[in-house]
Length: 125
Image (cartoon, rainbow, N blue to C red; front, side, top):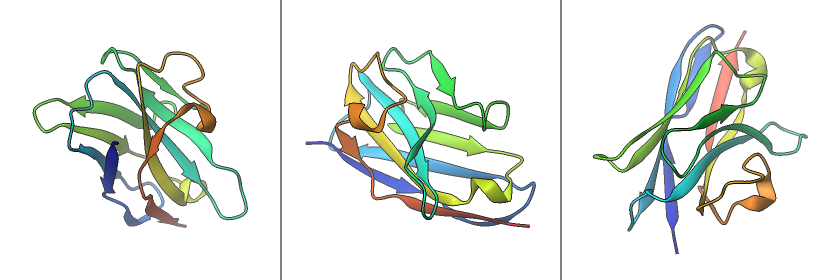
């Protein structure tokens, strides 16, 4: 069992930045594909970004490409989502998710086995 602990959400103004953290408790994230998703009120949960299990490959949703960066720190056993140039439409609950050796369908909610509790990000206009 993998428990994912998220932190870093908050309220920020349009154009501001936030950094979210996701730390698996009890084991290293090595070998796990770590995804970030978000869910706005009344909408489905959607893919945001992913750090593939090989550690070097990342993918992003078109809506965040060039503004968000996902990266892992092995020494701290933490995966980060750096969010810059935030917009009001980025407002959502953000979740990290994990699955060991996931390669295909990394953008799909159903492909992940473990989920964090979510952290609220609010971007004010």
